[in-house]
Image 1 (spheres, one colour):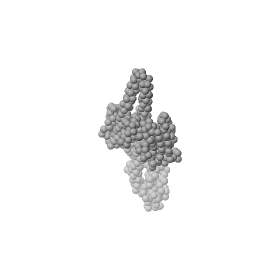
Image 2 (cartoon, helix red, strand yellow; image 1 turned 90 degrees about the vertical axis):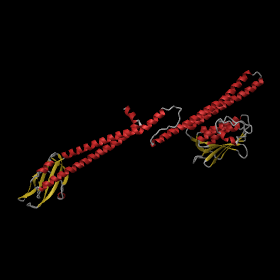
Image 3 (cartoon, one colour; image 1 turned 135 degrees about the vertical axis):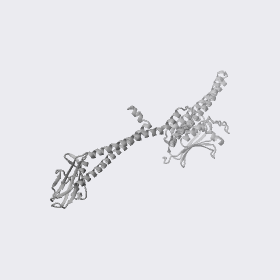
Image 4 (tube, helix red, strand yellow; image 1 turned 180 degrees about the vertical axis):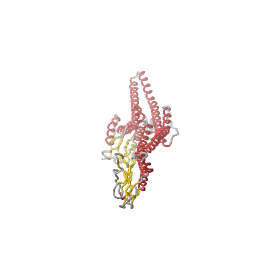
Length: 468
């Protein structure tokens, strides 16, 4: 049973079993039809013999002394009696039995029998018989009229002929069905051969070999090859991105860690209290930079992971932005920062990943607070056709237009801005860009006419998205 289950669990087994079921059903139907037509053919053949014998009996009727008599046609009756018993009866125009078996009954209509042999099924001496009846006009009788001749034959020969014909046809059906199943099995094996070839090629590959699979296959399997190559291409792209990210992260972490180690060495050898305090302050700043960089690296990895595996859920955008504002403003420290929030709707619902979206908005605010050195931040939500714009505007120096593309690339340090403000690690706005792309949106920068710098998060607005 387990072996059959394993066989039925394969593509070859499932396909072959389905074909075998169809062939067996068709063969059974053909066998039933063949049996029916074999019976019809045997019936017709022996009805012809029975009709001929009945006509010959009728032709051998004669009148002698005004009385109907019969000269039995021995040859005709012997042909019928080779495999069966034959019975006959002759009735004259008066309704008297003049020859044969008086108890042989026939339900044939005399009017129909006048036109030719009339057939019927019956039983005689507890045996099934086929009965033929014909009428002949006998004017020489004392009472001129129609005489009827009835000939009955048992059905053994008919049944035997039906069985022989059915057996021959059934044998042919069985052979053809077996041939069809065997041919199907060979065809399926041959058709599945390219899959086995693909399997062996992929199984023999080195895990680091992410080249497209190149194999000659039928056109129907090109879709599978295309899907496999598409997956390999996406996997290669993802692995390349992760390798680049790991290399960049290692490079980015190496510098502050080396600086931290050097500052500890200098602090250990310092004796001047004023210099000790200065070096402790520098050490705290470097440690804070390392912590912030580590957090951004983890956040970036988290965003990438969530973009691939976390399904979107309904998210209320206005309350989410307010929550992020409440958590982010304390980062300004002792600076006096004025924050405003404006939304044309009390609620805006959209399908999104709330955690990734919070991270994106938080990084846009951090960019203004920590790197833009702004003391005024305006956050607004507005609808523009089929998109939603979450805009973070600050009065800081911003990023020069020629650096806007680079600002969205991971670890792209922009150096000193035109106003002397140093850019961050290069991960914050890259995280924002990753989240927006995952949500089908984008990130734009703008220089408002009133001054300052704007980061615009563009999100698609689902049709019929509820808003109040």
